[in-house]
Amino acid sequence: MGHDRMVELDRCSGVRGRVTLGKVLKAIVVMRSLFIDRTIIKAYHEHVLTDDGKLDIWSKSSHQVFQKVTDHATTALLHYQLPQMPDVVVRSFMTWLRSYIKLFQAPCQRCGRFLQDGLPPTWRDFRTLEAFHDTCRQ
Image (cartoon, rainbow, N blue to C red; front, top):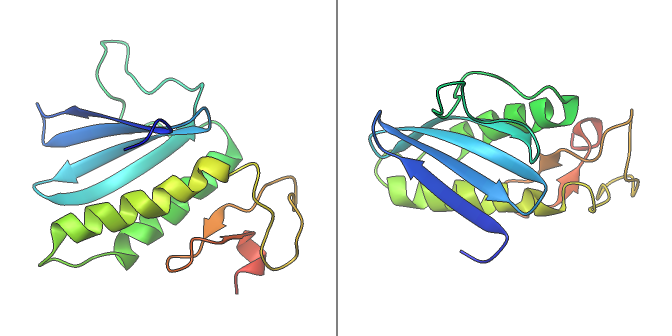
């Protein structure tokens, strides 16, 4: 998996996992049987556990940038759906998610800028994994 990604699983209630990408972000991944049901992306420093120590699968990030990445991750889950090949889906989604290790370092592939409206390029192309601002990806 490499040193930039750490995956922790909690199987007591379906499968819930926490994926940590460097010191950039944490992703909470909720699975139903072999399929990723949904995911929430938070800043590396944000809490991902509830008061009783369970993975918090409901609270969204308090940062707009990670709320945007969560929206894109939800879209990615729909894009990568292959009901007959759940292992490929999980692998493809994790590869796509891993491209966010450079969330604050990759300029937009269209406009070449790092920030637009105060946000870095939060969209990652599903095929090329290139970074784009939301408004530059059309």
